[in-house]
Image 1 (cartoon, rainbow, N blue to C red):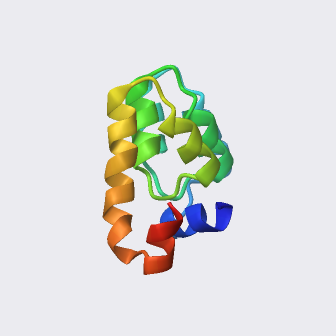
Image 2 (cartoon, rainbow, N blue to C red):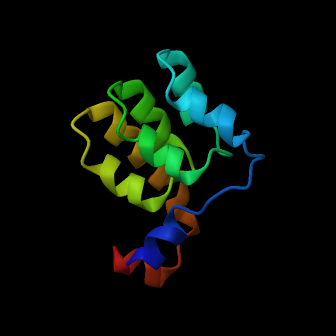
Length: 108
């Protein structure tokens, strides 16, 4: 199942934000900073997972829409209490669905 989810949530290869800077931004008191870093496809997976648990739903929505978000965070966000977060995750899945094989479509 994890292999299927990794295929569905294929990861992109954007240039990473330097670790110390991304760590600082992920813990920022500014929602705007956290949202900006949550949308960056070069962010380290553990920071995206951390941000998937952010108190602000717009930050979690940015993580949900991010193609680089690790599968474990996507699973967490699928259970989010905020409709917008789940909708952003569904949009991401819908964009990836046309690339699935017939076998992968049946596995879901």
